[in-house]
Length: 89
Image 1: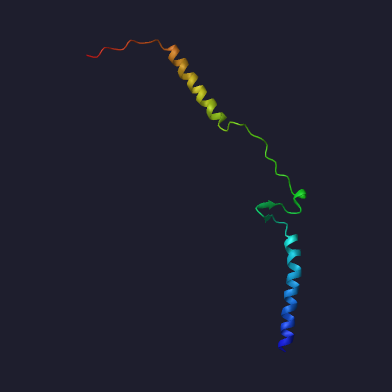
Image 2 (image 1 turned 90 degrees about the vertical axis):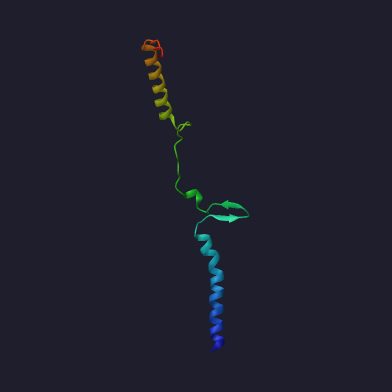
């Protein structure tokens, strides 16, 4: 009986060794080989993820608001007449 069990176990081991490469190939995940990350075999059929290019300067609105404030302060300074400083008593 022990021979039939060992044959059965050996059969499962052979089946596992034959099926393992097929499972690994069909999984479609990335592979790391010698420091390179290689894509799955189906990378050409994957969805394209496109991100539209944005402005180079990420804080454009903040910079525009600061410029408006600077211009507002400058225009207020030009409109207000210069007052002489009161002498200290």
